[in-house]
Image (cartoon, rainbow, N blue to C red; front, side, top):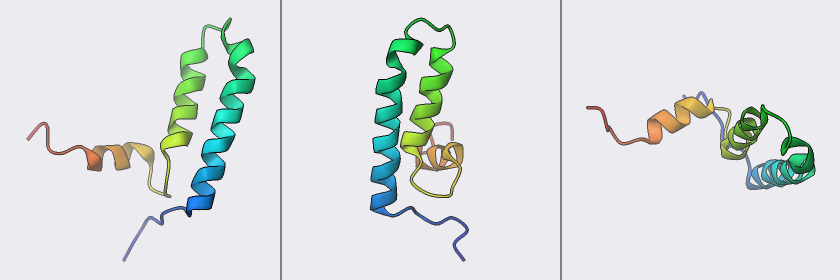
Length: 68
């Protein structure tokens, strides 16, 4: 039983293209804002997401037992 489904390659490409477009369009405004790190952190989360699985869970599973 698979709880999470991977996105198609087309969907991943469209998400990443939208992230690049949003980042480039927002750059002139975000250069002068104090909360730009939060905005670009959100864009990074959208870029990394490749399935229904939460990004934090996928990242935690990909790390190879550093703390054990």
